[in-house]
Image (cartoon, rainbow, N blue to C red; front, side, top):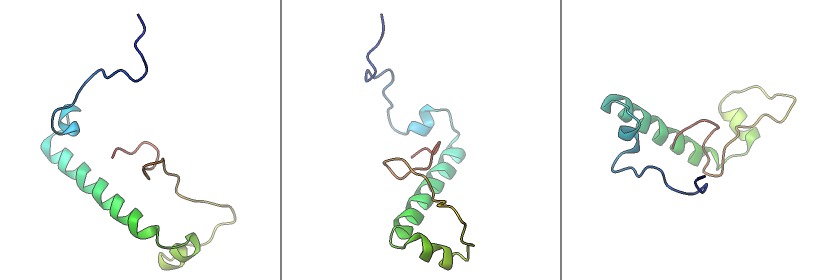
Length: 80
């Protein structure tokens, strides 16, 4: 029998990184990176792309090159 798409197959208890098998050190590093990334995004949202290029001393490209994020402002393949 096929399971419904939104049926929960595993409930996590506590830290999802523990459930995924990360060591405490790896989990701490990933959590720090995620928090840092979120802080950078929060600040970056206050500026236009042009302003960020000037602030970060990034050259302007011909095309529209922007960081792509999902609805939760995470880049593709990133964990929250």
